[in-house]
Length: 261
Image: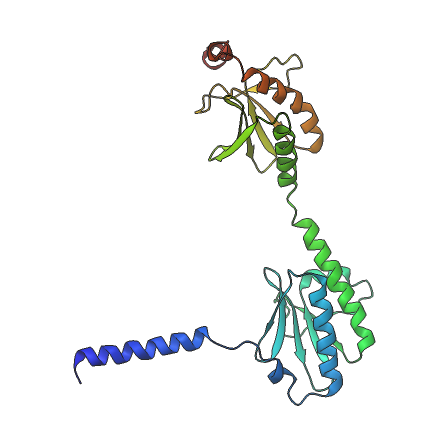
């Protein structure tokens, strides 16, 4: 056999192995329930229906020996035994176990799915479903970034100043423009960093930024909480008004701000 034929044969076998791996059938429902009593199958089906009804974000995977439910990571694993089901739950679900029905699963102490309960009748499913529902509500609420909320609220208010306000995203943040730039919003870990033109500030709430590629947006304010939006909006509106001025007037006192000793 020539070298070319040998290489071709090796490549073909490798390709077939790869194809086989990519086409693994994970829908093993029939295998999972094979030779199990009717009550165990009913328990699995009812649990499956109710868990998937909690949210479309919960995904189910049939594996060889069990069923896994996940969000961005596994949160539930169900093993079907002869006449019951064993449900393993994510460790963070334990905080909602007010009746203390969940037990540590032996050998899984360091796993994220370290708690379990055995269910052998339909009525007992309600408690576990409620645990999972509470956990999903908890992680849905805590996944909302408060900084994103501040950013979205402030952006909406700025866009609402006038129909001629436009915005675009750069590596510096979200820039708002009328005839020229008048505000930039940048997300920071602590809150929102707002830069604007040299507006009149009798209350001395604005600070002066260092030299930047977006001069003359030379004033800044940090939005840390919802109440700060009401404080900064009047200044952003002033900045918007200034942006319609002649460029020479726009830069009035600009050199003084940046280069004063």
